[in-house]
Length: 525
Image (cartoon, rainbow, N blue to C red):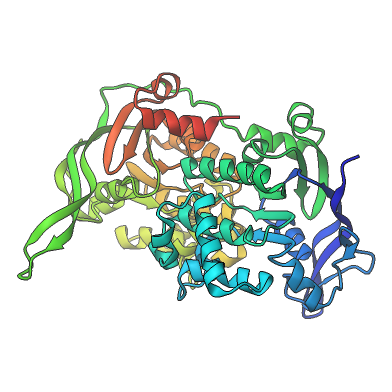
């Protein structure tokens, strides 16, 4: 019989807020076996992360607390209520933890090598010289090129994928029995996600570790886990072997997670209704200058991009971070300087252009003014472009738009913090569409959302497009989202469009090797 390394029994996680008590996880029970990968999946707020943080006692106690019957056993050691000396041995020693956002987890004032070496010195009592040598080996193991150079780098000098590799190196520095990875790939491009998943699988074999892999993406977990726990509203609603969960899910919520693997959009395009044509659009920034300020070398964020966007259709722009996707969208919206030109179907003056080209940004929380209520946020554009509009008419139009995006007039006087991530994105979409624009640039509008909410937003965008005839430029690094909404796809790499074609041809017969790697990484089961 396989040994249980970790046993969690009847664990509830509660938080005090004044006299009120909020239960984030309720009666959670599971085991983790030796050399097993256990996947924990669920949407934001389902209790995944608080359960994981409870194992290492990393919650804000005493504001956070557990029920009296809760038990977390690492071997024969009880961790609930354990003293600080015991937990110091466990944290970073017996159990390593990889957090979701490495930039906020790494100290920005210290070199990454020193941060890894520090945890080795603390747990293994090695000299700084020996800890440095081990750190260099760890950086090499996790796939960091030129480890001696990267040892001295600060976190901001590394890419997202490199920072996550540093976090993994830190987590495995003391040869832990268990590695907990909490959404370790959410903020990464699909190609980098693939690399991190492969790396974790290799490390599991090399170091004989068990892994708890937490994600909101069931399809991602399928590629690494042996067994899956599905959490919803603080409870484990389903658990079992990976293939059993995928072939015979018993709960509707699990079925909805599986169905979030979006199908290819069916499109019937009329190629003669071109709304805007991009001709050799180029965006460059000075890389080197002479003493007198003359530019001697440029870096090209967008390099001679040409494409068409058709009325009522969606152009998907896909590529990894730094490929030029967002820059291209900003150029289309005339928010940055560019060379080349955009030829529009009809001429616009400055004010009409601003009305007819709108943007929905990636993070709705940061793009919505927290001091304004929904009526003020969505109605702001109406007041700018139609100053003659009466307050009652603005309110009525905003209320109708909220209804269109799945909200209601009851939300008019609420503020952004009172909504979930998906609801905030609906508000951002309402703000863009209330002006009846001809084109909307959607910059990663679903990447910060759970997969079930992603599916809802994509369906909403398609429904609104069919009703209004608005064209979209949909920017994403996620080929699954692109697959669900795009009519045409432009694949970008290093500022260039390396392939552009209909969505059907891109997915069935990709010509460029980079396109093939994106599809394989994003859509592989």
